[in-house]
Amino acid sequence: MPRQSDSAMLRETMILFEVSQRRLLLGLGSLTPNRLLIVLMRKGPLTPTELVRITGLEKSWISRAVDGLVEDGFVEKEPSATDRRSVRLILTAAGLAQAGRVDAALEDNARSLLAALDSEQRRALIAALAPLRDVLKDRAP
Image 1 (spheres, rainbow, N blue to C red):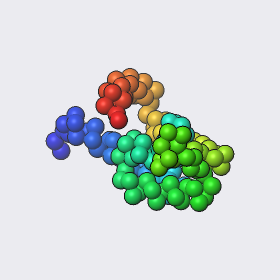
Image 2: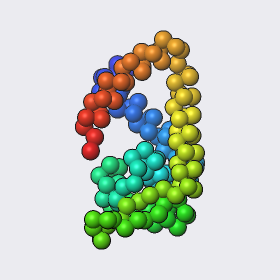
Image 3: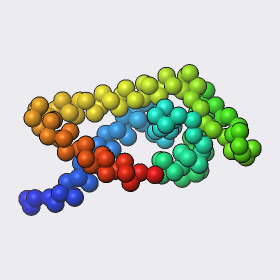
């Protein structure tokens, strides 16, 4: 079997990792709402427009997911102080608790994957991922 190019290896690895994370999120409820809870937990109150920019999801997906999160008592809509047509999305105590559960499950998943590597492989992987993470952060919206 021919050796994969570095870029193909990176793409395949990222896809497989993303699939494992998505399966986990689906097991905890619905994929998009759980992703939004994590973003709100990490970034703080945001407008729906900011969520679209950060996640890359379509406005209609965000709108439906936010409506469900509000209905479930995980998010509150606070009117914007500067724009009457806009709202900021704020996690409630229940939303923060759910986001914490989701984040902990995602963390456990990542730790279990890393635990499958020996300590030398794990150190090498983390050393290689740090500069890649920095490049991705620089390119993030």
